[in-house]
Figure (cartoon, helix red, strand yellow):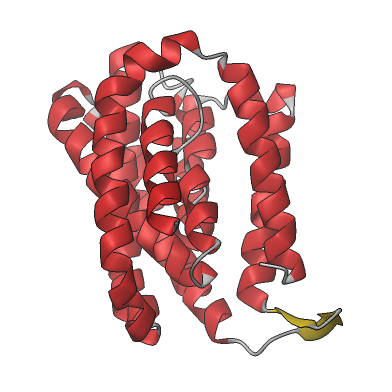
Length: 260
């Protein structure tokens, strides 16, 4: 069941990223979190996200503005390592509370609470019209890189902030997309160093069960990149955005409360 759901979400989301502010990691991570520990879900999503962006990198890298990449990507790489290390720290902290509903016992952990609240925050931002029009002057690119990288490392939510800071960098449409892809690859590579050495090692037994979901998610993401352009032209993106944001909101509340 998880393979079907993960594959379907990766397929849809990979195409959706061609047209909207949603990122593959933003939507796919909560799906992985339904089946695996949240820290491992973030790490696994990063692998799929990285593989998909490497594919795009090969197609678009020549169109990227490398001066912007340096100003944005270097702070992003450093902050991604900090965010990923903080995620690993939260993952090792003892549970905050336990409670019982009926015959079931639920556990609220630090990592679930933090990531769940961040999902709630980012989903509410997606539902806020003013956030969609948010753009920062190009002088703030290093700060934008740091913020995008930090939240990318901590929770996987990097795309919305990245877009808000790159949109005013004076880039053409093609350079904007390509520069965003290169920045995402930099963040993914940085955080995967921490995820691979710390989080995956801490969840070694469950990590081995993720090989099939990662392969399915990656292949479906590739397919989504190919077919998304034609299929999604027939979809009302605003409706999709609202539905996905509400789903993220519910999963965020579920994580923070320990229900998931």
